[in-house]
Length: 311
Image (cartoon, rainbow, N blue to C red):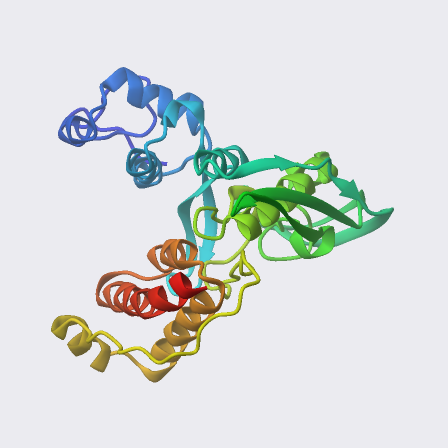
């Protein structure tokens, strides 16, 4: 939590101080900032986390006061600490799909049999590690079908999500977070909806806060299935040249980083989930590495465009 300073505090009661100039650049007043900090994002620990949420909403044309996004702390191995990231909620993903004009409804969810399991492990409570044990009764899986209009045809996209593969964990261990203990069906339902929406609208839908909570920023990118089953052309196309500055930066990258980015680009190409891949690299990388990753994705997307149009 930031320490208030007289020259930075926007209001006496505001727990996250911000410079007035920053508020002006965002088009916010002190009262709105206090609402964001105390009511919209009460769990936020940094000014940067709230700023990221505001800028995300402004870029997407969303009203941040309606809570379309959530600030999710995620472990960053490179930094050795948690960092605050921003992910859309399931309502925002569904709204984005509806705005395409091709949203055609969703079937009621189907749940698997209920299981009861005891989880135990070390979790951090008030900066101290403690042993914790909890028993949870949860549905084994949840399945949701989303419909999209493709060429005037109502096409189903069904995804099955398994509770034990999806639930958010405390401190990277096996103990579920409080929300997954309290709402085991509701949280799994949100994740199943998100997975099906991503399958139906891979170019629009993103991973959600419910799916990313308790995960690490170093986790491998999981891309969505291809939306259409039409064959993809294998006709060779010329690969656009890299930006000279980006190419120079690539020479300074280690082989492991280049291989990781190449793998991400290939997964994005196979599923055409370019927006999801771009969101991921923006959260994962910074500086020259980010520029290189975005450039590689842009080149791959440009190469893939003729094949996608032919399909």
